Length: 267
Image (tube, rainbow, N blue to C red; front, side, top):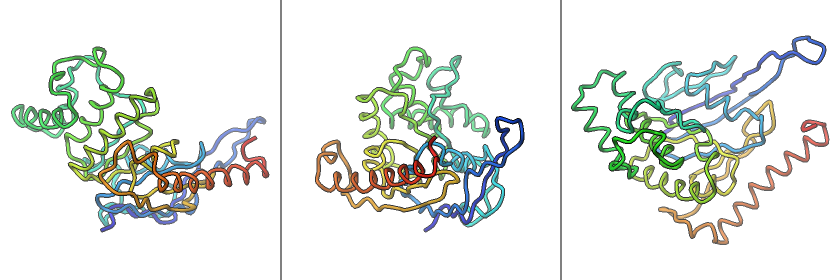
């Protein structure tokens, strides 16, 4: 079943050029995408192609100018508890403990203290941080903070999880560990996930499908189905199948880059 349908979505901004005159900057144009219930879909593409813009529109943090976006076959609402977002930064409240950070959204929903504690405990166990429930964010490592951020979003049980390069600021080793942890969490809950990344390997490892966007104004240029067995482990990166998919995605990115270089798009 289709969870999200985007049809001919357009988004533009007005910016001032070097002469001080306003110019129209197209960010999304003719953007079409289906995201299926329970799937893990990654969005990749060159910098500035509109990946985060589309994510922000789905999250209710931005508007679109024309086209149509449906979530669960209903027109996209700007504010909804059915969508949760994990940012590049941890975005945790430094004055609240780990458990209290998890319970922030649950408080807004008006749940009782006992219910909040029950739910926060479940998700702290899921991300392996129950022993740190009374710690403050500054007492945690970067990887642990990002696990708290993921758990906080999961705690109010959104139907659609939006992730904007959540591991980009982490060191390579921590990033690889959290990729596997995220897969375990996803396998347990099977949330619909839209994941933005600049890492080809990360997109392939995590995803059911990888959607490739063209340069701005961005649109979906190709979608690759990742036919790799699940559950996935670190070892799958060394397989011939993984290498073949990596070459295909790298080729798409390289061809788009060369095309835009020829037109001065990256100058």
